[in-house]
Image (tube, rainbow, N blue to C red):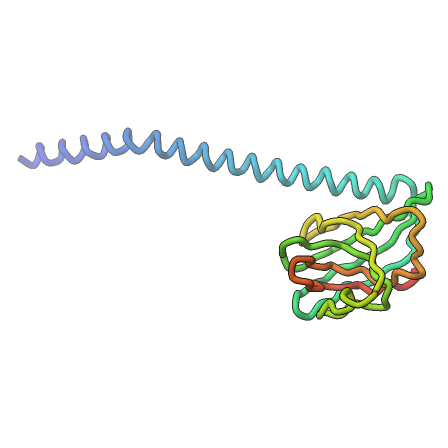
Length: 176
């Protein structure tokens, strides 16, 4: 009788091992696929960063202005720097940048010394220059500044949520 029970338990354990094997392999394959996707995303991000760095260093860009981000309602940090490349092209680079995630967020230059959190400065007749949609709420990123832009007029960078008329953060620019 004891032999029969032991044999039954051994058979059950063996059957369970064979039945679980495909499931374990499926889980391993899913993990590997997920790891491959993460690796590909990281490779893409590294490639974008290398492209950005190449843009900044290939032509020996000159630093013109810089400022640190601040934000009260939406914690925003990092640095905004305006570079002029050897060919005269202007680029705004955000470094060590971090802000809240949100819908329809843009990077704009504003013709004011600073941009407060309430974004009422944009409802008024404050001149602004759209540089594009925010590429990501974290990390280094570049934005081209259109040729002929008068940097003496645009004195701050704003991270602006158009949908909610909210200034996520701002960086007053000072000459470097």
